[in-house]
Image 1: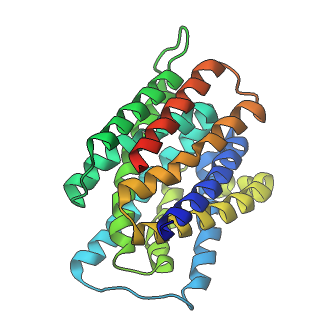
Image 2: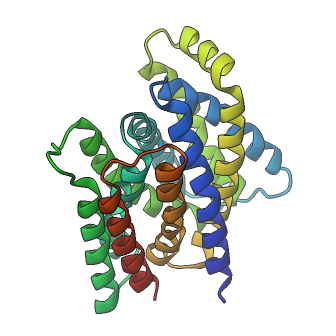
Image 3: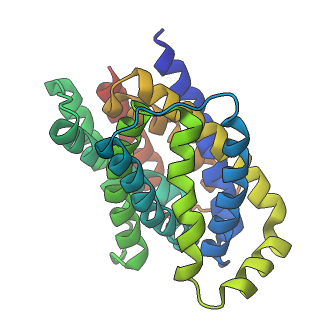
Length: 278
């Protein structure tokens, strides 16, 4: 088994822990302040790792890639928090996977990655799975679905940046460029940031620490996998672990509205990812 496959699977499993914690923690709470604290602790973790692994292929174009990566992350992080605050975990877990539809297109244009007809069929199943999961009886396409849809586009672009960044710098350096801009600019998006940040720490510190630990492991493994394998397939395998989030949403968070759609959509999506990965 290729090394990137192992890394992508383990990273995907870890990512589902932080998806679950985020939905549980920020439901009806301050998602932006929560994400700011996450960035504080994550920067601390990867800053400590710089001592052991720090290298960068320096050039103006590479520096622009790393800076662009950090700016796109700000947008993705903001949408990520809003998505989990407004949307059922079992729906957002699948609709946000539309990034797997956009990512091969972006990868073809920017990374010159090509897919087979079987892999394009997988993309079709993923799209169908997302639609089946999102549409319920008398359902209106509201703000929460729109946010999740936009997040899927931004996340696909972020994956392309991460692939490029992983080729020009060590993982701790990549994470520094990814997180420090968000750490600086997220308070600008908040009203009364000091009050909100202090309140979030007091109310959610345990969730923040669990989220940070799981997310840091997931991001480290994903970045290492992207350094070794094709972006479309690495991210697809990473995202295939979504079944954990869907089941946790249904069983633990009691998100049983449209349960048949969610389960059918999950099956279609997993089947599509399997074809995409091959």
